[in-house]
Image (cartoon, rainbow, N blue to C red; front, side, top):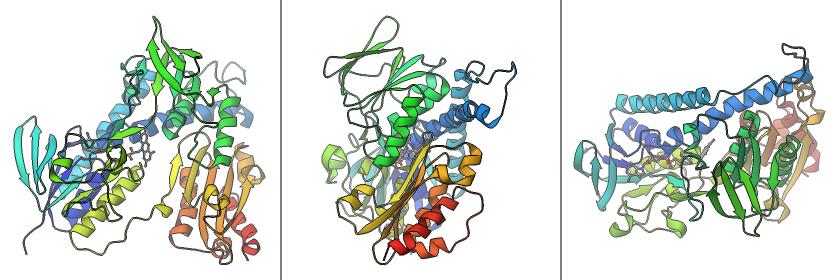
Length: 466
Ligand SMILES: Cc1cc2nc3c(=O)[nH]c(=O)nc-3n(C[C@H](O)[C@H](O)[C@H](O)COP(=O)(O)OP(=O)(O)OC[C@H]3O[C@@H](n4cnc5c(N)ncnc54)[C@H](O)[C@@H]3O)c2cc1C
C-alpha cells in the first residue's frame, strides 16, 4: 500500500501532536513551522506564562507562610518587605525552559521519523504547499494537509504594543525590571492570570475590565471569589471600563477609557484576545471556507470545507486551549488515515485559570443549568469546612458539582482552590465516563485531602438527585 504523505503547517500542539500520531500510524509526515517547534504555546504563550506563574505562586506561598508560623530573619512576620523577585533571572529561566521544551519536541518528532522544516508554508493548490524558509523555497505535494497555524495577540489601533511600555503578553519576558505600576487591559483568562501573577511578584496592578466582573466567561461564583481576593490584596479593578487608547508618556503610559477617565501606569499589558493566523496561507484561493473573524470552519473530526484539508487548534476558533488543539490534531490524523475516531466532545474539556486561587471547570456550566438548558442539580461546598484546607490555611474556594436530575450522572463541576488544575481530574473522569454521584460517593478519598470535598459533594447530591 502507498504511504500517505501528510504536510502539517504549524508546529504547535495542534501540529506536533498530529505529526506524532500520523508517524506512529506509518504516514510520511512533514511539519513546517515559521517560528519554532512547540508553537506559540511553548515559546511565547502557555508554557512561558505558566513558568512565570510558578514563580508568582512561590511568592504567594511565602506571603502566606507567617500565618502558618514561619518567621523570617529579623523577627518580623511581614514577608513582603524582605523578599524581592529578580525579574531578569525569572525571565531568563522562562526563556530557557521554553527553548528546552521546543528542542525536546523537535527531537521527539525527528525520533519518530517526522521531517521538520523551518519556514512559512502556503497552500498553492488543495494538495500542494509552497514553503519559504532560511534554506530556500520548496514545494511539498501531500495527500493530506493539516493547517495548525495558531493565533496572535489582537492589537487595538490606538494601543499598539511598542515592546517597551505598551506590551503584548509576548513582550513580557524581555523586561529586565518588574513593572512598578502595571495596567492590564482585558479581564479574560489571560488578563486575569497576568494581573494576578504580577501583583504577587510585587507590581501594583490595575485591571481594566469592560464587564461587571473579571472573568466574564467563567463560573460567576468562582469569578466573584477571585475578584474579592485580588481586591483584598490591593488590586484596583476598573469594572465596566473599556480602554479606548493607550499612549506613552515620558516615564510610562496613560490608558484612556471610553468615558474619558484616565489611568496612569509605568507599563500596560494588552490582553484583549487573539486573531487567527489564517491570512497569507492561501486558504481562500484554494477554496477553504473561513468563518467569522477569519477562523477556519471545521467539523467535529477537524475537516475543513475542502476534502483532504484539515485544520486544528486556535486557527479554527473552536476553543483556544492547547489540549483542544492537540485533540483536534490527533482526531484529524485518525480520520485521514482511516482509523476509528471519536468526534471532538467539548462538554468533557477540563480547563483552568492559573490564578491564586486557581479556577478549574469541566462539563456543563451554572449558566446552562440556571437557564434550564440542562436538567441538573448542583451543590457547592466551601473549602473553609475541609480539614486539609484549614491545615493549609486555605480560606477561599469551593467545590461545585452538577448532576443530572433523576439519574445522578455527573455532568460537570467547578473547583476553586490552590491546586484546582490537579483536583479537577476526578470530576473530569466522572464526566467523561458518565459516572454517577453514587459511584463518586462510594470512592475512597484520602483523609485529610481537598478531594475529600469532591466525594462529600457527591454524597450531598446522592439523595437530592432523585
Ligand atoms: C498567555 C496565554 C496562556 C495560555 N495558557 C494556556 C494554558 O495554560 N493551557 C492551555 O491549554 N492553553 C493555554 N493557552 C492557549 C494555547 O497556547 C493555545 O490554545 C495553543 O497554543 C494553540 O495551539 P496551536 O497548535 O493551535 O497553535 P500555536 O501554538 O499558536 O502554534 C502555531 C504555530 O504555527 C506557526 N505558523 C503560523 N503560520 C504559519 C505558516 N504559514 N507556516 C508555518 N508555520 C506557521 C506559528 O508561528 C506557531 O509556531 C494560552 C494562551 C495564551 C495566549
